[in-house]
Length: 445
Image (cartoon, rainbow, N blue to C red):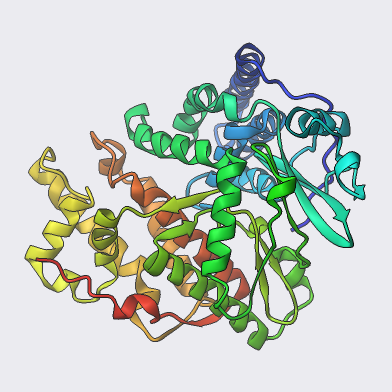
Protein backbone atom coordinates (compact mmCIF):
# COMPACT_ATOMS: atom_id res chain seq x y z
CA UNK A 1 0.00 0.00 0.00
CA UNK A 2 1.42 3.37 -0.97
CA UNK A 3 0.68 6.25 1.36
CA UNK A 4 0.83 9.85 0.21
CA UNK A 5 3.19 12.02 2.23
CA UNK A 6 1.14 14.18 4.62
CA UNK A 7 1.63 17.91 5.03
CA UNK A 8 3.14 19.17 8.27
CA UNK A 9 0.50 20.52 10.65
CA UNK A 10 1.48 23.76 12.38
CA UNK A 11 -1.26 23.77 14.99
CA UNK A 12 -3.87 21.46 16.44
CA UNK A 13 -7.31 22.44 17.78
CA UNK A 14 -7.17 21.74 21.52
CA UNK A 15 -10.17 23.48 23.09
CA UNK A 16 -13.64 21.93 23.10
CA UNK A 17 -14.99 24.91 21.15
CA UNK A 18 -12.34 24.62 18.43
CA UNK A 19 -12.79 20.88 18.09
CA UNK A 20 -16.58 21.11 18.11
CA UNK A 21 -16.43 23.75 15.39
CA UNK A 22 -14.35 21.39 13.24
CA UNK A 23 -16.92 18.63 13.66
CA UNK A 24 -19.77 21.01 12.81
CA UNK A 25 -18.03 22.20 9.62
CA UNK A 26 -17.36 18.60 8.63
CA UNK A 27 -20.97 17.64 9.29
CA UNK A 28 -22.04 20.47 7.00
CA UNK A 29 -19.74 19.18 4.24
CA UNK A 30 -21.15 15.68 4.60
CA UNK A 31 -24.66 17.14 4.43
CA UNK A 32 -23.82 18.95 1.19
CA UNK A 33 -22.39 15.73 -0.23
CA UNK A 34 -25.73 14.01 0.42
CA UNK A 35 -27.66 16.86 -1.22
CA UNK A 36 -25.47 16.58 -4.34
CA UNK A 37 -25.84 12.79 -4.35
CA UNK A 38 -29.64 12.86 -4.21
CA UNK A 39 -29.79 15.61 -6.83
CA UNK A 40 -27.76 13.42 -9.21
CA UNK A 41 -29.85 10.38 -8.32
CA UNK A 42 -33.03 12.27 -9.17
CA UNK A 43 -31.68 12.79 -12.69
CA UNK A 44 -30.07 9.35 -12.91
CA UNK A 45 -31.84 6.75 -10.68
CA UNK A 46 -29.04 4.22 -11.34
CA UNK A 47 -26.50 6.50 -9.61
CA UNK A 48 -24.75 4.43 -6.91
CA UNK A 49 -23.19 5.57 -3.61
CA UNK A 50 -19.53 5.19 -4.61
CA UNK A 51 -18.92 8.89 -5.29
CA UNK A 52 -20.83 9.89 -2.14
CA UNK A 53 -18.78 7.46 -0.04
CA UNK A 54 -15.50 8.75 -1.51
CA UNK A 55 -16.40 12.38 -0.86
CA UNK A 56 -17.60 11.69 2.68
CA UNK A 57 -14.57 9.54 3.46
CA UNK A 58 -12.20 12.29 2.28
CA UNK A 59 -13.99 15.04 4.22
CA UNK A 60 -14.31 13.03 7.44
CA UNK A 61 -10.72 11.75 7.33
CA UNK A 62 -9.32 15.23 6.64
CA UNK A 63 -11.15 16.55 9.69
CA UNK A 64 -10.17 13.66 11.96
CA UNK A 65 -6.53 13.72 10.89
CA UNK A 66 -6.42 17.44 11.71
CA UNK A 67 -8.00 16.86 15.13
CA UNK A 68 -6.02 13.69 15.85
CA UNK A 69 -6.57 11.93 19.17
CA UNK A 70 -9.66 9.88 19.99
CA UNK A 71 -11.59 10.78 16.86
CA UNK A 72 -8.79 9.62 14.55
CA UNK A 73 -8.23 6.53 16.69
CA UNK A 74 -11.85 5.45 16.19
CA UNK A 75 -11.39 5.82 12.42
CA UNK A 76 -8.23 3.72 12.60
CA UNK A 77 -10.04 1.01 14.54
CA UNK A 78 -12.97 0.91 12.12
CA UNK A 79 -10.61 0.61 9.14
CA UNK A 80 -9.31 -2.71 10.51
CA UNK A 81 -12.71 -4.36 10.00
CA UNK A 82 -13.30 -4.72 6.27
CA UNK A 83 -16.98 -5.50 6.87
CA UNK A 84 -17.65 -2.49 9.09
CA UNK A 85 -17.42 0.29 6.51
CA UNK A 86 -17.85 0.82 2.76
CA UNK A 87 -14.60 0.31 0.86
CA UNK A 88 -14.02 4.04 0.31
CA UNK A 89 -13.95 4.66 4.07
CA UNK A 90 -11.78 1.64 4.80
CA UNK A 91 -9.19 2.68 2.22
CA UNK A 92 -9.06 6.27 3.46
CA UNK A 93 -9.14 5.51 7.19
CA UNK A 94 -6.36 2.94 6.78
CA UNK A 95 -4.00 5.90 6.40
CA UNK A 96 -4.41 6.47 10.14
CA UNK A 97 -2.63 3.15 10.71
CA UNK A 98 0.52 4.38 9.00
CA UNK A 99 0.71 8.11 8.58
CA UNK A 100 -1.32 11.12 9.68
CA UNK A 101 -0.24 14.76 9.19
CA UNK A 102 2.65 15.32 11.65
CA UNK A 103 2.91 18.32 13.97
CA UNK A 104 5.54 20.96 13.37
CA UNK A 105 8.78 20.95 15.36
CA UNK A 106 7.99 24.02 17.53
CA UNK A 107 5.00 22.17 19.02
CA UNK A 108 7.24 19.21 19.80
CA UNK A 109 9.73 21.50 21.55
CA UNK A 110 6.87 23.02 23.54
CA UNK A 111 5.91 19.55 24.84
CA UNK A 112 9.50 18.82 25.86
CA UNK A 113 9.85 22.09 27.70
CA UNK A 114 6.63 21.41 29.58
CA UNK A 115 7.68 17.95 30.80
CA UNK A 116 11.49 18.16 30.92
CA UNK A 117 12.15 21.93 31.11
CA UNK A 118 14.53 21.31 28.19
CA UNK A 119 14.35 21.12 24.41
CA UNK A 120 14.95 17.78 22.62
CA UNK A 121 18.44 18.92 21.57
CA UNK A 122 19.31 19.61 25.22
CA UNK A 123 18.51 15.97 26.08
CA UNK A 124 19.63 13.96 23.04
CA UNK A 125 22.82 14.11 20.96
CA UNK A 126 20.68 14.37 17.82
CA UNK A 127 16.92 14.68 17.29
CA UNK A 128 15.09 14.70 13.95
CA UNK A 129 13.00 17.82 13.48
CA UNK A 130 10.64 15.97 11.17
CA UNK A 131 8.58 13.06 12.48
CA UNK A 132 9.42 9.69 10.94
CA UNK A 133 5.91 8.43 11.66
CA UNK A 134 2.69 10.11 12.77
CA UNK A 135 -0.48 8.33 13.87
CA UNK A 136 -3.60 9.05 15.91
CA UNK A 137 -2.25 9.66 19.43
CA UNK A 138 1.32 10.77 18.82
CA UNK A 139 4.25 10.97 16.42
CA UNK A 140 7.71 9.41 16.44
CA UNK A 141 11.06 11.15 16.03
CA UNK A 142 14.45 9.50 15.63
CA UNK A 143 17.16 10.50 18.11
CA UNK A 144 20.60 9.38 19.23
CA UNK A 145 22.14 9.29 22.69
CA UNK A 146 25.54 7.90 23.72
CA UNK A 147 25.82 5.93 20.48
CA UNK A 148 22.30 4.45 20.69
CA UNK A 149 19.61 5.15 18.10
CA UNK A 150 16.26 5.88 19.74
CA UNK A 151 12.60 6.27 18.83
CA UNK A 152 10.95 9.12 20.74
CA UNK A 153 7.16 9.15 20.76
CA UNK A 154 5.61 12.55 21.47
CA UNK A 155 1.90 12.81 22.25
CA UNK A 156 -0.17 15.43 20.46
CA UNK A 157 -1.25 18.40 22.62
CA UNK A 158 -4.75 18.18 24.07
CA UNK A 159 -5.36 14.53 23.10
CA UNK A 160 -5.72 13.23 26.66
CA UNK A 161 -8.00 16.11 27.70
CA UNK A 162 -10.41 15.80 24.78
CA UNK A 163 -11.33 12.10 24.93
CA UNK A 164 -14.84 12.53 26.32
CA UNK A 165 -15.80 15.48 24.13
CA UNK A 166 -14.32 13.85 21.01
CA UNK A 167 -16.17 10.57 21.50
CA UNK A 168 -19.39 12.44 22.10
CA UNK A 169 -18.95 14.35 18.84
CA UNK A 170 -17.79 11.38 16.76
CA UNK A 171 -20.74 9.24 17.86
CA UNK A 172 -23.24 10.68 15.30
CA UNK A 173 -20.76 9.94 12.47
CA UNK A 174 -20.29 6.39 13.76
CA UNK A 175 -24.05 5.87 14.11
CA UNK A 176 -24.59 6.97 10.52
CA UNK A 177 -21.67 5.02 9.03
CA UNK A 178 -22.35 1.80 10.93
CA UNK A 179 -26.12 1.91 10.71
CA UNK A 180 -26.50 1.53 14.49
CA UNK A 181 -28.55 3.44 17.01
CA UNK A 182 -26.85 5.19 19.91
CA UNK A 183 -27.73 2.60 22.56
CA UNK A 184 -26.04 -0.12 20.47
CA UNK A 185 -22.94 2.01 20.22
CA UNK A 186 -22.80 2.98 23.90
CA UNK A 187 -21.20 -0.23 25.18
CA UNK A 188 -18.56 0.11 22.45
CA UNK A 189 -17.82 3.74 23.27
CA UNK A 190 -17.57 3.02 27.01
CA UNK A 191 -14.83 0.45 26.45
CA UNK A 192 -13.08 2.66 23.88
CA UNK A 193 -13.07 5.54 26.37
CA UNK A 194 -11.45 3.43 29.09
CA UNK A 195 -8.80 2.13 26.71
CA UNK A 196 -8.03 5.59 25.31
CA UNK A 197 -7.53 6.99 28.80
CA UNK A 198 -4.88 4.35 29.44
CA UNK A 199 -3.41 4.77 25.95
CA UNK A 200 -2.73 8.46 26.51
CA UNK A 201 -0.87 7.78 29.77
CA UNK A 202 2.72 7.24 28.63
CA UNK A 203 3.86 6.48 32.18
CA UNK A 204 1.49 3.52 32.19
CA UNK A 205 2.60 2.52 28.69
CA UNK A 206 6.23 2.59 29.80
CA UNK A 207 5.44 0.31 32.75
CA UNK A 208 3.43 -2.11 30.62
CA UNK A 209 5.97 -2.11 27.79
CA UNK A 210 8.80 -3.14 30.09
CA UNK A 211 6.70 -5.80 31.84
CA UNK A 212 5.22 -7.35 28.71
CA UNK A 213 8.47 -7.43 26.76
CA UNK A 214 10.26 -9.11 29.66
CA UNK A 215 7.51 -11.72 30.01
CA UNK A 216 7.44 -12.41 26.25
CA UNK A 217 11.20 -12.43 25.68
CA UNK A 218 11.33 -16.24 25.42
CA UNK A 219 9.14 -16.37 22.28
CA UNK A 220 11.24 -17.19 19.23
CA UNK A 221 11.69 -14.70 16.36
CA UNK A 222 10.26 -11.69 18.19
CA UNK A 223 12.18 -8.45 18.73
CA UNK A 224 11.39 -5.85 21.38
CA UNK A 225 12.76 -2.40 22.04
CA UNK A 226 14.64 -1.33 25.16
CA UNK A 227 12.81 1.40 27.06
CA UNK A 228 14.37 4.49 28.67
CA UNK A 229 12.48 5.78 31.74
CA UNK A 230 14.98 8.65 32.18
CA UNK A 231 13.93 10.11 28.80
CA UNK A 232 10.22 9.44 29.22
CA UNK A 233 7.33 11.26 30.88
CA UNK A 234 3.55 11.47 30.93
CA UNK A 235 3.50 12.61 27.28
CA UNK A 236 6.91 11.49 25.91
CA UNK A 237 8.06 7.87 25.58
CA UNK A 238 11.61 6.90 24.54
CA UNK A 239 12.67 3.45 23.39
CA UNK A 240 15.41 1.84 21.33
CA UNK A 241 15.07 2.05 17.56
CA UNK A 242 13.86 -1.18 15.92
CA UNK A 243 14.77 -1.85 12.31
CA UNK A 244 12.24 -3.40 9.96
CA UNK A 245 9.58 -2.75 7.36
CA UNK A 246 5.84 -2.37 7.61
CA UNK A 247 3.90 -5.27 6.18
CA UNK A 248 3.15 -3.82 2.74
CA UNK A 249 6.81 -2.93 2.14
CA UNK A 250 7.96 -6.31 3.44
CA UNK A 251 5.65 -8.23 1.11
CA UNK A 252 6.76 -6.23 -1.94
CA UNK A 253 10.08 -8.12 -1.78
CA UNK A 254 8.34 -11.52 -2.03
CA UNK A 255 9.61 -13.28 1.12
CA UNK A 256 9.73 -17.07 0.95
CA UNK A 257 6.92 -19.20 2.32
CA UNK A 258 9.30 -20.42 5.02
CA UNK A 259 9.91 -16.85 6.22
CA UNK A 260 6.18 -16.06 6.06
CA UNK A 261 5.41 -19.12 8.17
CA UNK A 262 8.16 -18.32 10.66
CA UNK A 263 6.88 -14.79 11.23
CA UNK A 264 3.27 -15.96 11.31
CA UNK A 265 4.11 -18.54 13.96
CA UNK A 266 5.91 -15.94 16.07
CA UNK A 267 2.87 -13.65 15.98
CA UNK A 268 0.48 -16.49 16.78
CA UNK A 269 2.62 -17.66 19.70
CA UNK A 270 2.88 -14.08 20.98
CA UNK A 271 -0.89 -13.60 21.09
CA UNK A 272 -1.49 -17.11 22.38
CA UNK A 273 0.92 -16.48 25.27
CA UNK A 274 -0.62 -13.13 26.13
CA UNK A 275 -4.21 -14.41 26.04
CA UNK A 276 -3.68 -17.52 28.12
CA UNK A 277 -0.65 -16.92 30.33
CA UNK A 278 -0.37 -13.27 31.31
CA UNK A 279 -3.97 -12.34 30.37
CA UNK A 280 -2.87 -8.93 29.11
CA UNK A 281 -3.01 -8.39 25.37
CA UNK A 282 -1.37 -6.02 22.87
CA UNK A 283 -4.79 -5.00 21.56
CA UNK A 284 -3.79 -2.73 18.68
CA UNK A 285 -2.73 -5.28 16.05
CA UNK A 286 -2.80 -3.11 12.95
CA UNK A 287 0.14 -3.52 10.53
CA UNK A 288 1.70 -0.20 11.58
CA UNK A 289 2.61 -1.67 14.97
CA UNK A 290 4.83 -4.45 13.61
CA UNK A 291 8.22 -4.27 11.90
CA UNK A 292 9.13 -7.21 9.67
CA UNK A 293 12.61 -8.34 8.63
CA UNK A 294 13.69 -10.82 5.98
CA UNK A 295 15.52 -12.94 8.53
CA UNK A 296 12.07 -14.09 9.68
CA UNK A 297 11.80 -11.92 12.79
CA UNK A 298 9.19 -9.34 13.69
CA UNK A 299 9.50 -6.33 15.98
CA UNK A 300 6.59 -5.51 18.28
CA UNK A 301 6.05 -1.82 19.00
CA UNK A 302 3.49 0.34 20.79
CA UNK A 303 2.13 -1.22 23.97
CA UNK A 304 -0.15 1.75 24.58
CA UNK A 305 -3.35 -0.21 23.90
CA UNK A 306 -3.28 -3.18 26.28
CA UNK A 307 -6.44 -5.07 27.22
CA UNK A 308 -6.34 -6.67 30.67
CA UNK A 309 -8.59 -9.77 30.62
CA UNK A 310 -10.66 -10.13 33.81
CA UNK A 311 -10.25 -13.62 35.28
CA UNK A 312 -14.00 -14.13 35.60
CA UNK A 313 -14.53 -13.22 31.95
CA UNK A 314 -11.61 -15.25 30.60
CA UNK A 315 -13.14 -18.67 31.27
CA UNK A 316 -16.35 -17.76 29.44
CA UNK A 317 -14.75 -16.01 26.47
CA UNK A 318 -12.63 -19.01 25.56
CA UNK A 319 -15.42 -21.56 25.92
CA UNK A 320 -16.19 -20.95 22.26
CA UNK A 321 -12.83 -22.43 21.21
CA UNK A 322 -13.74 -25.88 22.54
CA UNK A 323 -15.00 -28.00 19.61
CA UNK A 324 -17.39 -29.86 21.94
CA UNK A 325 -19.23 -26.73 23.15
CA UNK A 326 -22.07 -26.84 20.66
CA UNK A 327 -22.60 -30.56 21.32
CA UNK A 328 -23.72 -29.84 24.89
CA UNK A 329 -26.95 -27.82 24.93
CA UNK A 330 -26.85 -27.01 28.64
CA UNK A 331 -23.27 -25.78 28.34
CA UNK A 332 -23.63 -23.63 25.25
CA UNK A 333 -26.83 -22.06 26.56
CA UNK A 334 -25.07 -21.11 29.79
CA UNK A 335 -22.10 -19.74 27.83
CA UNK A 336 -24.31 -17.73 25.47
CA UNK A 337 -26.09 -16.09 28.40
CA UNK A 338 -22.85 -15.36 30.26
CA UNK A 339 -21.38 -13.73 27.14
CA UNK A 340 -24.65 -11.85 26.51
CA UNK A 341 -25.14 -13.35 23.07
CA UNK A 342 -28.66 -14.04 24.33
CA UNK A 343 -30.40 -12.29 27.24
CA UNK A 344 -33.41 -12.89 29.47
CA UNK A 345 -34.99 -9.73 28.04
CA UNK A 346 -35.04 -11.17 24.49
CA UNK A 347 -38.29 -12.34 22.96
CA UNK A 348 -38.51 -16.05 22.01
CA UNK A 349 -37.98 -15.05 18.37
CA UNK A 350 -34.88 -13.02 19.25
CA UNK A 351 -33.45 -15.85 21.34
CA UNK A 352 -33.88 -18.26 18.46
CA UNK A 353 -32.43 -15.81 15.94
CA UNK A 354 -29.33 -14.84 17.96
CA UNK A 355 -28.68 -18.42 19.04
CA UNK A 356 -28.48 -19.49 15.42
CA UNK A 357 -26.38 -16.45 14.44
CA UNK A 358 -23.81 -17.02 17.18
CA UNK A 359 -23.63 -20.76 16.50
CA UNK A 360 -22.76 -19.95 12.89
CA UNK A 361 -20.32 -17.24 13.94
CA UNK A 362 -18.50 -19.51 16.38
CA UNK A 363 -18.25 -22.37 13.89
CA UNK A 364 -16.72 -20.01 11.35
CA UNK A 365 -14.46 -17.70 13.37
CA UNK A 366 -12.79 -20.33 15.54
CA UNK A 367 -12.06 -22.68 12.65
CA UNK A 368 -8.27 -22.01 12.89
CA UNK A 369 -8.32 -23.46 16.42
CA UNK A 370 -9.98 -26.69 15.38
CA UNK A 371 -6.95 -28.17 13.57
CA UNK A 372 -3.32 -28.66 14.49
CA UNK A 373 -2.21 -26.29 11.72
CA UNK A 374 -4.11 -23.69 9.73
CA UNK A 375 -3.36 -22.09 6.37
CA UNK A 376 -4.17 -18.39 6.67
CA UNK A 377 -3.59 -18.06 2.94
CA UNK A 378 -6.91 -19.86 2.41
CA UNK A 379 -8.85 -17.28 0.38
CA UNK A 380 -12.03 -19.35 0.54
CA UNK A 381 -12.05 -19.17 4.34
CA UNK A 382 -11.59 -15.40 4.40
CA UNK A 383 -14.22 -14.97 1.70
CA UNK A 384 -16.64 -16.89 3.92
CA UNK A 385 -15.79 -14.57 6.83
CA UNK A 386 -16.42 -11.54 4.64
CA UNK A 387 -19.71 -12.89 3.32
CA UNK A 388 -20.92 -13.75 6.81
CA UNK A 389 -20.05 -10.28 8.07
CA UNK A 390 -21.74 -8.68 5.07
CA UNK A 391 -24.86 -10.80 5.57
CA UNK A 392 -24.95 -9.92 9.27
CA UNK A 393 -24.61 -6.18 8.58
CA UNK A 394 -27.73 -6.33 6.39
CA UNK A 395 -29.72 -8.69 8.63
CA UNK A 396 -33.01 -6.92 9.37
CA UNK A 397 -33.51 -8.67 12.70
CA UNK A 398 -30.03 -7.77 13.93
CA UNK A 399 -30.40 -4.14 12.86
CA UNK A 400 -33.73 -3.85 14.68
CA UNK A 401 -32.55 -5.59 17.86
CA UNK A 402 -33.40 -3.68 21.01
CA UNK A 403 -30.10 -4.17 22.80
CA UNK A 404 -26.40 -4.63 21.96
CA UNK A 405 -24.83 -8.09 21.99
CA UNK A 406 -21.80 -9.24 23.93
CA UNK A 407 -19.93 -7.95 26.95
CA UNK A 408 -17.65 -4.97 26.66
CA UNK A 409 -14.56 -7.05 27.47
CA UNK A 410 -15.02 -8.90 24.18
CA UNK A 411 -14.53 -5.80 22.03
CA UNK A 412 -10.75 -5.50 22.19
CA UNK A 413 -10.18 -9.26 22.43
CA UNK A 414 -12.17 -9.85 19.25
CA UNK A 415 -10.39 -6.92 17.66
CA UNK A 416 -7.04 -8.47 18.56
CA UNK A 417 -7.90 -11.77 16.93
CA UNK A 418 -9.38 -10.05 13.88
CA UNK A 419 -6.22 -7.98 13.45
CA UNK A 420 -4.05 -11.08 13.90
CA UNK A 421 -6.10 -13.07 11.36
CA UNK A 422 -5.80 -10.19 8.86
CA UNK A 423 -2.02 -9.93 9.18
CA UNK A 424 -1.58 -13.71 8.93
CA UNK A 425 -3.80 -13.72 5.85
CA UNK A 426 -1.70 -11.03 4.18
CA UNK A 427 1.40 -13.04 5.07
CA UNK A 428 -0.36 -16.16 3.75
CA UNK A 429 1.26 -17.98 6.64
CA UNK A 430 0.73 -21.59 7.70
CA UNK A 431 0.67 -21.74 11.49
CA UNK A 432 0.52 -24.37 14.22
CA UNK A 433 -2.55 -23.13 16.07
CA UNK A 434 -3.06 -25.80 18.75
CA UNK A 435 -0.67 -24.31 21.25
CA UNK A 436 -1.07 -23.07 24.84
CA UNK A 437 -4.88 -22.81 24.87
CA UNK A 438 -5.29 -26.50 24.02
CA UNK A 439 -3.88 -27.53 27.40
CA UNK A 440 -6.18 -25.23 29.34
CA UNK A 441 -8.96 -26.72 31.43
CA UNK A 442 -11.96 -24.56 30.59
CA UNK A 443 -14.62 -27.03 31.67
CA UNK A 444 -17.29 -25.30 33.74
CA UNK A 445 -19.64 -26.62 36.38
